[in-house]
Length: 199
Image 1 (tube, rainbow, N blue to C red):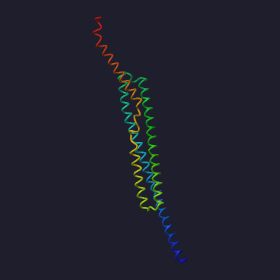
Image 2 (image 1 turned 45 degrees about the vertical axis):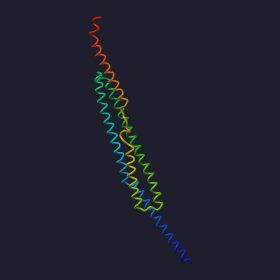
Image 3 (image 1 turned 135 degrees about the horizontal axis):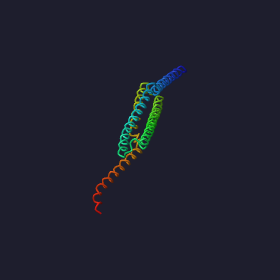
Image 4 (image 1 turned 60 degrees about the horizontal axis):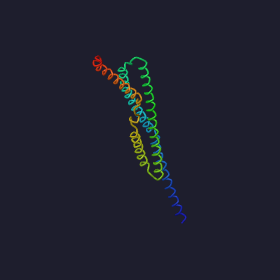
């Protein structure tokens, strides 16, 4: 009777060792997927792409505001003077602020992606400890990694940068409106002048 109990104990021990080995291998596969060089490369590519998109958008906005300012200053007869230099300095300052904001948004998106990876890794590790096979752990890790990147990309767009020159645009618009009023006043004076001579 003792021999039967020893066999059952040994069989249970072997089964437990096999289960623990499977848990270690599955956990190793998950760790490798989330912390390996391939994932680091994907994270680097992710933030480089975001920086590129935000920088391109900031540059596009700067071209538009530069053009508006140039024509607004010309309409007001302010080209080449201190007012033009002040406007150019202000635009440059706002552009640098926009670039800093784009970097902040890029870093925040990367941070969110890393947090999503950590949450997925914890869930998959719990699954592995519950007995998931190595192939299941590897497949679900790959799926989670792709899903996390897609989710992070969908949350971040160049629209989140906003109009970095909103303040300057309102100044340019006010200058354009003032130029329009001056033109209207000149035209009204020209129109009214023949009628005022006879009084």
